[in-house]
Length: 382
Image (cartoon, rainbow, N blue to C red; front, side):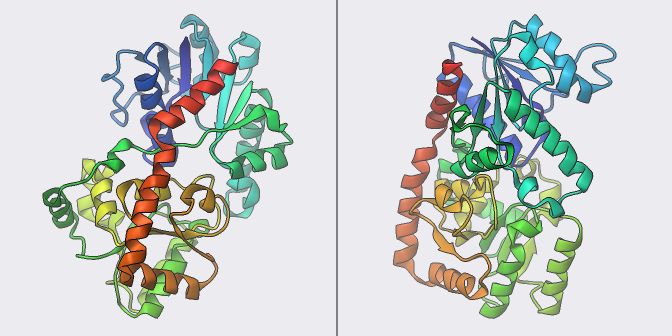
């Protein structure tokens, strides 16, 4: 079978959608080598190296006007290339499919990660909400089948777009298998020195936006009075990060909250940009703290569990779905609950060890092979 992918995110996105695309494509190519995989992308970059697989082919727009109007190529003109490459099935990996693909006779699948912009439209530019709604709804209505990355997302697709349940399959995502590999003490120390990390720290990974609730951790740190510092991997713009930094400055927490992504060592490091150093950072952390108010899946929770790192996360949205019986769940609106969780994880070695063991067992349910099998099962039913 010739399987085509919208691979823009695989080559151009360094965060969640990019990680999902790269991990799924690699897993399918590895565990189902009998098929041929075509990665359709406006631009081929070093973000994803497909050359290690002999059953993957990169396809980018050739010749004017396609190589100039790449967004139109990706959303429309790509249909000609799909037919030329004799694609048997097309998978839009991030909420979109080409307009009119149903007229080509090529079956299509679309992955919907979340509908957060529908739940929290005021946190987005109104123009962006309108564009997203048009693209997402179109994909849901016209794709032959929808993959939701969690039961939460499946319910949202059914609620907001009135899509019948039979058209949606939940296929959980996996994370890069590098997170399951133990990093040597020598390598950890090398990474610690490179980024000037403290001997002990809590870890936050994610965009710095209101929904992800970083301010709650900062308020808990203030109550804990200069205990273990927090390392933040992620960036943000706008009023929310300004609010956080104002709080940090006003409460003498400057040395307690380390915005690692803003440090020169991280900005200049290729191994930070491509997340190659992240397993070592996870494995050195006391715990990952991820108090998000709403997610489609919450990939840092899985990355932490694979790394053998305890997880403190929210007791709402899909977080219990992702964390299973392994995480320490808190009310994401309660400073007291967060303070208690941070104290418990840092002082109760028995509880911590139990969470690590349960986390690694639970993470095994999201292995790349199992996730690839679930997606291939969807393909084979079309």
